[in-house]
Structures are given as C-alpha cells and as structure tokens.
Image 1: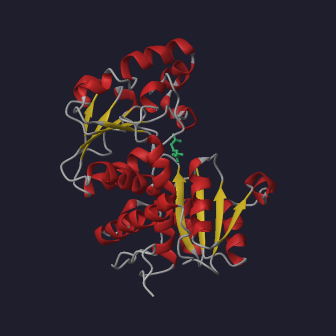
Image 2: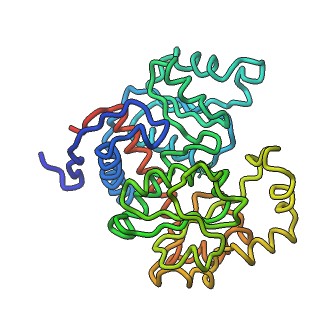
Length: 330
Ligand code: NCD
C-alpha cells in the first residue's frame, strides 16, 4: 500500500564505514547524507514517526567533553530511528579510575555496540578507536580539529535556506583557530562549491601553514563584503593552551575586553549590513550573547538560522546514523 505520509527515501549509495573527518566521505556520500537529512527533516516537521531503520542496533554516546546540542541530538536521532541508545556518564565511568579512553571505549564496544559517538579533546583518539573497535566510530567533536556532523548539519541548513551552496560566500567569523566547527565547515562547504573566508583578529586565525588557500580578513567590513552566510563562533577559552600565550585567552575573559571585542567583531544587525542584503547568520552554539553575536540578531527569525541549525542537527544525525548503519535506503 502506498502511504502518502511515507515518501520514498532517497536512492543512492553510501560507502563510508566511519565518520571521523569530512574526508571520510566521498562526494557521493555527502550528497546522500544531505538528501537523507532532508528526507528525515520532512518527518520531523510533520511530527510523524520515522521508519525504525535502526531497530535492533545499539548506539553508545561517549562524551568526554561537555556537550548539550550534539549529545542530545545524537540521542534523539538514534531513538527516532528505533536504536537502543545509551549515554555513558563519563563522570561515573572508569576513566576516573585511570582507565585509558581507548580501554573504556573498547569495553563499551564489547557489550555489543554498533556505533559509538565519541567526543574528546584528544586529537587522534578517534582513529585509534577505529583501529581497535568493531563498531562504527562517529566523531562528535575532536579537539580543535574536526566536528563533521556539525558541518553536515550546517550544510543541510544552508541548503534549506539558499537551495545550494554553489557560488555562495560563507564568512566564518571569530575564534577560527580553536574551532573544530570551522575546520570541518571549511573542508565541507568548499567541496559543495562555496567560497569560504575566515574573519577575525589575526591571532585567532589558524596557523599560517593551515588552510593556506582560504582568504583571511581582520575586519568585518572587508570579510563580510558580499557574504551570503555569516557564521559566528564562540571564543573557545578552554582550547587556548599555553602555546597561545597569556595575551589573547586571558585578556579576552574580562568584561571590558569582551565589550571591545564585540565593538570590533560582534555580529549585529548593523555589521550584517556589510554582507549581502539577503545574508543569514549562523552559529553552532553555545553562543555568548554580547561577545561574538548580538542577542537581537541571533533571535531575529528573518536573519538568523540558529534554531534551524538545531532542527537540522537531529535530521542530519539521523541521516548519518542511517547511512552508516542501515546501508543503502530500501
Ligand atoms: C561546538 C563544539 O562543541 O565544537 N558546539 C557544538 O557542537 N554545537 C562549538 C563550540 O564549542 O563552540
């Protein structure tokens, strides 16, 4: 029987067996996840139950770093597809008894996980897990390096607003240097045909030998000129190590320097005028209102895609889990 409420899932192949970095995905894989995300977004918009394509599968969420959006949306995504989802409270796990992160994850996997979503500050941990575990490893945030599902959900959000990313200008603003969101977005959005720029104080731009072919701007006026999408990033103090020196991290914490930063680099209705007239603002959250973004702009439904990003977070993670675990849509 044909059910009008149940549109056919998108056709297409998917070859990746893990999702640690954007480069784990072929162009075909990216296209498939984005189409599948739109398919699941349809269910979420109608509040209709999605097909339980992950029934019988076990998903373990292992977050060694704080998370609100990512952890919750992975949990919802797995549950909406019928998976058994287990959140490991890391504070109660053996990590605090000195067990290595790999051993902890291996123990969880031995209990029968099909997929493990891992967030950790250690870069390289995900690759070590992938080599040791039988289950699929998904990166829920790795240090300052990659956050692939955030980039995928940002791409899905941008596509829903602009129809596509080909030829679009995306200005990623603020603390790009310490942002895994910026890293994954720079990799993904350019593959989808966008021009990516980094905008912010030079000391918060990535080291000179990274992303050498991405143009950097140290004023909003120049960096936002003609931009279709303006992406704000939080100041990630916790990732500013000693290597970074006292001057930036420490200096920006106090209120006066936050205010100064906002005056120069804060995204507001006013500074958004430098961008294209139809420009939209995005932010992965958590936001610091009055530091990198004005609350009035973040809350403006005509200019801000922030809540749409949260919505697409669930749909896109459903798509990624389905693609990795259920194989080709049938
Ligand atoms: C980001 C993260 O954890 O990398 N948040 C998120 O996943 N939505 C961005 C951040 O921490 O600033």
